[in-house]
Length: 345
Ligand code: HEM
Image 1 (cartoon, helix red, strand yellow):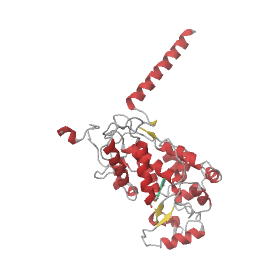
Image 2 (cartoon, helix red, strand yellow):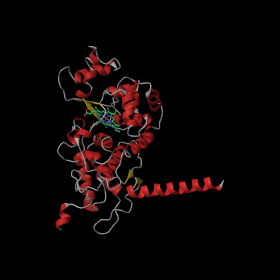
Image 3 (cartoon, protein in one colour):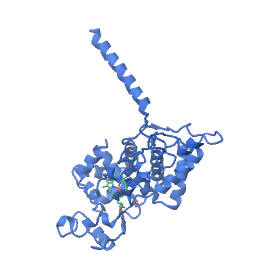
């Protein structure tokens, strides 16, 4: 009788040891990973999260669109090769050159923050973590509320346009759900994350197909509110290749804060992208959309979903490095933490 119990206890102990060893080998994301890890030239401890916050605050005071830029950047980074700053690498045919990333903004700003941190405590803070921290701070500047972020990511060494397989603006909701599920994000995570479209803009080319000849019907998308349709037809004339853009959140008073107004707007037929409009109509998501529009927990739940997005396929062990510059790997062979100057000097 005792044997199965002993065996079970042994198995549990072994599995605990295994789990904790796995944790040690690969490292794990943590809240406050950088606490006590950044000392400046004079030996003073510096608060990494505060350095990032001050940079974002200063930038936001002159450019509120940085919120949209960084949110989109985090999504595009995390969905391709995991949250490893691979989107920032300037390499031939890198992710930056893929069509969906051509309109991603904020690359220079992340490098600017990185430079300040490297001048303070070199070789400590990853670019992948800077993207996640700066995005959080920008969202928080937009008066959405603050959420904690986990840190401890390392930077990837590979960036290839071929890996960029992001959902298209016309993706049907069930397929979008499958794409998010493949990153271990649930349907409800996806609904909240699409609340990122409560800020920023989309260019005509990404919704023009809805305005004149939707799916070869010779008519516009019937799900679009007719007032919005007229506005968008003026903004994006037929066969014009216009580079104009429309706010993703059509509430003019709330189009630059990350809030639930996006969900209210798509319920009124004011979704700009096809996927945004379908979110309010598809049977998989429409009840969630109605609930979010009618309640007050969007900020909290959005923060929770952003934490999950920030954990997608992260590198925390030898598979990653701490880059010296966000646009370039230190060493393709994985000689993490050393740059060529160290070899000579
Ligand atoms: C099914 C998923 C998604 C699709 C198909 C999608 C598609 C798009 C498209 C087509 C644009 C317009 C780009 C342009 O005109 O330059 C856009 C903009 C944007 N997306 Fe998404 N997106 C998705 C999910 C997300 C998520 C999860 C976030 C963030 C959490 C996000 C944040 C943004 C932001 C903030 C913008 C505006 C960027 C700016 O103004 O610079 N998107 N998205």
